Length: 125
Image 1 (cartoon, rainbow, N blue to C red):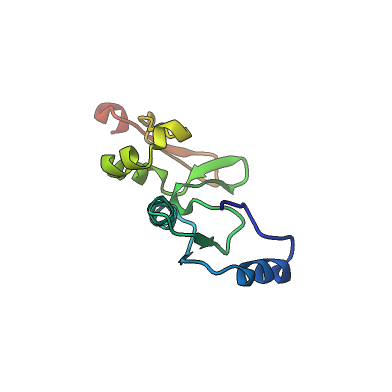
Image 2: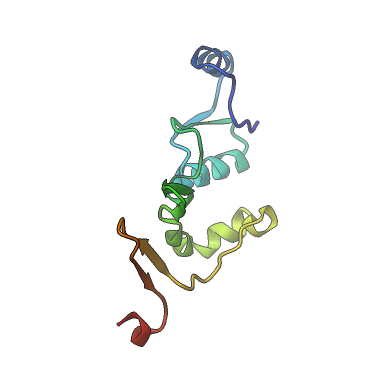
């Protein structure tokens, strides 16, 4: 069973979670927790994933940290995701696309300047 949330209040969530007997409970809905939960569910276990934030994905989330700028918290680390996991969980069928980043880094400064880095070492210098 996959649900975004169990209810609209903390009381509803707790009640729904305690009504069912789970084979496994994964604490944390980051990319590692979701991967573990997917393997457990694929193995036939009923799995509940608990995440305290309003969004799942952990380091793989893109968020507006500075007003007007969206940042990938650490999504570049997803390129380190083992190919065997991508294959096993058929992540491509579920929309996973690993894209090369160009530029690879953009860091805005409060005074309007910025640092932009990419694959060209001469331009970076």
